[in-house]
Every structure is written in structure tokens, then in C-alpha cells.
Image (cartoon, rainbow, N blue to C red):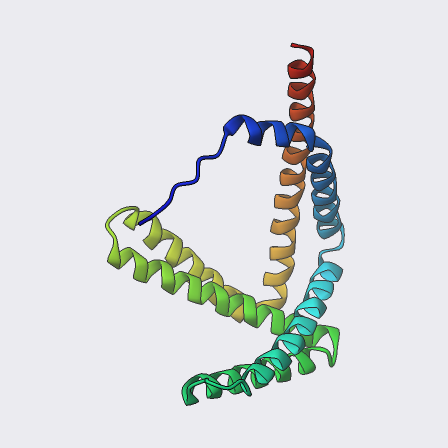
Length: 191
């Protein structure tokens, strides 16, 4: 039996209106991060690559530790040890230098694009709804994955630019939404 939770839309709107400042803060931070990515795309890629390297090391250690848990099947234990070991090794190699970290980030981005592309194509075969868009999206993701893997340096700088533009536009929209909510809250309070 499923249960349905009813949400009062007025409560949600009131909550948003009360916290318009949080939306404004989020918009400003998003705008600033986007601008930083646009002005210093190379340095942004290196910072992100270092964060990914640190994440790889930490997640690798935790996966290896999880591999020692009781009750795991042999296959799951092996998977945790192998994936944890690979993650740890990739993270340590990436920490060997900024350019290695950026290269590893490019490889991870390229592989994730390939997996996402194949997932889209396979899901298009299972469902008729939106099949054309899924096929189109899958092909675009596959092409993107191959481009990133073949030209990692150029691809990461381009990704930084695209993400920077997206964040600047998103930040502007968050700021506009925050002021719109503040105006709505004032009108509601005076009514």
C-alpha cells in the first residue's frame, strides 16, 4: 500500500518568501563562481582536478575498508578491493602534479560521458516515450565522450567555459528570483 503525502503549496510559498535572502546568496555565489571559471578556466580546471584527486584517494580508502566487512559475497568483496585500489592509485597519481590531475579528470569526464551516452541509447530501446530525444542525447554524449578522451586539455578548458557561462546565467536567474520573492512577500504582508 502506498501513502501519499499532501504538501500545502501555501506553506512552500511562504517558506520561499521568508528565505529570499538565501536565494539571493546562492545567486551571488553562483554568479561569482561562474565568473571565476570564465576569467581563469585553466586554474579552475586544476582546482577541480585536485578536488577530484582528493576524492579519489578518500573514496578508494573507504572502498577498501568496506571490502573487509563481514557478510559480503566474494564478488562484492573483490569489486570493492579492485575499485578502491584503482581509485586510490588514480588519486595518488593525480596528486603527483597538476597536469596529471587534469588528465585524470578528463579521462573520468570522458568515460562518464560515454557511459551516459550508452545508457541513453539503451533506454531508448526499452521505451517508446521520448525515444528520438534519447537517441539524439545518447549520440551527443558519445561524441562528447570521445572528444574529451581524444583532446583532454582543450575539452576541459571548453567545459570550464561552458560551465562558467551556465553558472553566470543561473546566478543571474537566482538573483532575479530572490528579488521577485522579496517583492511578493512585501505585497503579501501589506495585503
